[in-house]
Length: 415
Image (cartoon, rainbow, N blue to C red; front, side):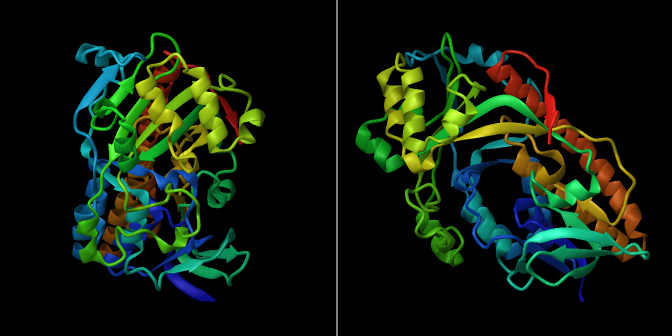
């Protein structure tokens, strides 16, 4: 049976950051990802960066990858503007009742393509990442864990980490009582290349700022942009280049070298149609639904929506995890969306997963160096992870509810 110190299930930002950090400190690690292609819808968008995420990447990436990360970052607008649906400015005072009024650690000028970030995090891990579909784990009497796979041999590990997202199989076995809630919100988003926006004469108010559209009635629309410099990528090989794994997927949604403007809006469930009705619609049909709903808005805003690339448009159900109480520590643990999935309203999800990894690396490295029990290190990690993770879940949920409903609302758990 294959042997490793740490087996990580899931190759998203959190799992790969963990692998980079552990390997940097000489801890043997193996990552198991079910597919060589990461083409979920969200993968085509940027990740807004927060200090917690930057700190964890700085601590866990080797110097040459950290250099590549900063060199290939996208640029986002630093100034914000707020308008009504006729594109009349509402003034800076109108921002006072937006958001959560909390201290923020975001870097508005920095945004990273999720594809570029994955390229960076995979670099140097080629021999540690295996394509395998995880099934379940067994715990041995000595505290170690055996991970089983549907299409690969089992792996014997000192620690098993579930970094396998909202549908985590690791979580379902470790914490079968953990649940999620449908927030009652449906998110619609899309993109347009900045070159196309220029051709169409899309106004600068919608391309050069973090722009909020707050109509007198109805739901808000947020617009921002992600600008990249292809010339900066040349030094770093494939990092920043279009990813070959997305070749053949139509449209530019997974294009990694094109600057774009993107928008997103959120509606209460059934406001745009039932889930069953909307599930059968492609990007073009969803654009038609939205533009019909906001047909009275200024044509300059409508042009941005109606001429967005249909391949970049999809409707997502917004769900959130229900915080769980601490559990008895074992040699199996969780990070990121596998334990605290959250709404997108404060851009905390990806940064929180990366931050989780930083905490876990710190605890495991200290335990290894000092000869301390791994169980104690995992216990300390889980307490810290749950503390900041639950706070992030609550913060993003409150921001969503205020934005969409105007107040906090009750949630019903779902599996």
